[in-house]
Amino acid sequence: MPDLIKTLKAEHRNIETILRQVHDLGIGTEPGRKAMVSAKIGLLSHLAREDEHLYPPLHEAARDDEIVHDALEFFTADIARVGELAISFFERYEAGNPNGDFSEDFDALLAVLAQRIVKEESVIYRMYDRL
Image (cartoon, rainbow, N blue to C red):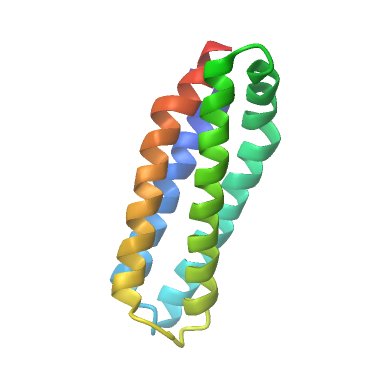
């Protein structure tokens, strides 16, 4: 497994861990808000690393491989949806003044991220490993 994939998988675990800390600490506490900022920074950094290092070689491979092409189309649409949900969540709760049901919104975000991680690790990362 290439170092990039190891790094990305470790980042997945770290993001999940920090988000669980946010939930456990509570959004109304200073440590909870700090953990939320850390989760946001970690997620944005992770997405930037994927955009810079993971997806360019896959897009190149997609020129000659219809399966890679189709997978990337799906994942591009999916990440846009996940990104919108995550940004909305962070904007709503970062200041600690929720404008919604934190627990329900948190559970929805965590579920979407968990699904995305499973899909990414089982499909996209494996495609990258084969390049």
